[in-house]
Image (cartoon, rainbow, N blue to C red; front, side, top):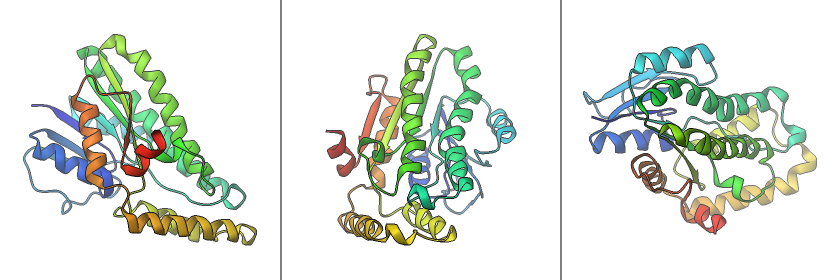
Length: 249
């Protein structure tokens, strides 16, 4: 029986991906910063482990506790929306520690067992914001663009060991908590600086319009992750969602 470890499973893409893999007969190790037993169906093929991917020592312990796995999905991430001038340094570091360095360290932790086995799949969930520059997203986009470059280099570096490395770039998914979390963090930091109000109004209007259009459904992202894990010939990059695919084209 195959086993996948998925980070950031308390909501959004991670939660839906964990459900899908369980439905497909896989064993799932679902990690969450604040474990919630109620969000996933009870199964003898499911383990929920507490993990904050910014805690380096915890990553090693959790990967060891998970035992042998066949695939890793680096999904855990946090959003941030705001101009550079209004972004506190601690926020910049938090975004990169989670989105970028968390992905690096999770990957590093599973490589020894994948190399020893001569097989394994690593799927990194990035963002369609890396496909086209947008205002108010310099920090978040930079954190995900680093993941893109990391994944592309690793694909070449790890192929000789039989390890596949893939990238999924979701579009905007209004049904997830991601956008609300990003705006909440911005409010906690004092909101948008007044000088950027005109730009912010335009950006928020565009996000609201996109939310009404429901441009990316979670199942589209889940399907892309599933292909990246299970199909050896899956392309290195997959855009997921109508808006993401339009940008990629």
